[in-house]
Length: 72
Image (tube, rainbow, N blue to C red; front, side, top):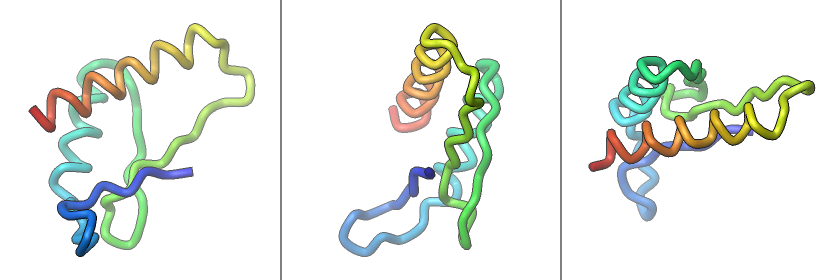
């Protein structure tokens, strides 16, 4: 599973710089994310099978905060 970051929904132009910024922001907040895809504009979701609800909640919160910080 991955989320593709694009500049424009109509043209689907890859937003490599935004994807890199989100990954960098998440790392600073303690969450490791992985870029993928032909243009490195996708962020892969790789959850361990033994993740707890609390850990998943924490990771999603950090990811949300990282997206908000970059897109603000």
